[in-house]
Length: 143
Image: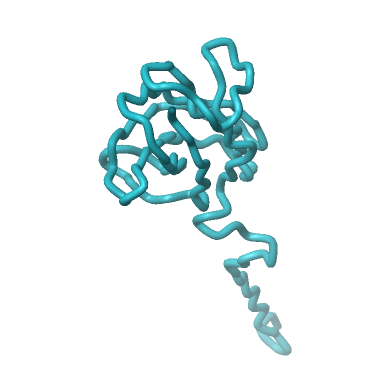
């Protein structure tokens, strides 16, 4: 007779969402390195430049993820009183996993003085303006 001693077999499937200890925070998705002032050919200029001299505010951007991501590279230049005198950006750059890419924004100072260029990497611009890296800054002396 079938039915005697029939055991019930239960299979449990457990799905667990694991957040690995090495998961990246929002600000670790990319990193900014080697901020510097360069000419149009990528040669370093130092931090002292002249009025009406075109420069590139350059930095290396590294995708720290194991997947591709689009970024927006933004630079704002402030005078010594903190007033923003220039804002520039490049959007739509796609970085492959672990790819490093050098990006720059052009700036021509119109007045002498002390300036600070702040470099940001965001997830997008202007719609998704979430920072995906800590910002970097570089001092600029214009004479």
